[in-house]
Length: 168
Image 1 (cartoon, rainbow, N blue to C red):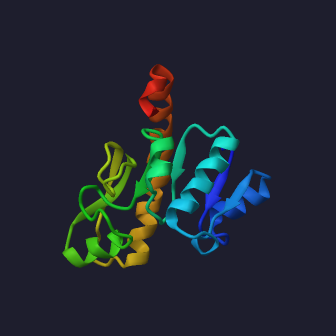
Image 2: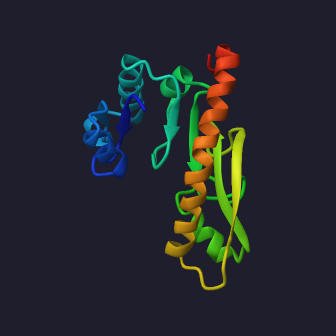
């Protein structure tokens, strides 16, 4: 990890970066005239630190064109469902419970202009138990995310090493 950017300075990722002296950009939308201006600042921050791969883990904003274009094929997102189920929403865990689903899970996918619809790199199923709450189910989904995210990062790194033009 070479740099961290966040829209929420109080998040765990920001604390992680501070504790380890990893360059950190705190990019609250309130500090910018638009989402695009924020994304230009984030793009420039990452480019300045020679970041090659972006991992959206806990990032809860939609990237705009300047950021997507700069890192096309090099941005991955962790989503708390088995996409395409319950995509496009921050409340996928609650949706899974309300739907009566017996299974949900975690997905790591490439970020594209189409929200939660980029190519899937990996998924892991998580059963929905009859006595689950949003908190208990979210905890089990997080455990799956912790397992699949490193594997997805290695997979994308290998792809980029074989064909650097993939992300360009």
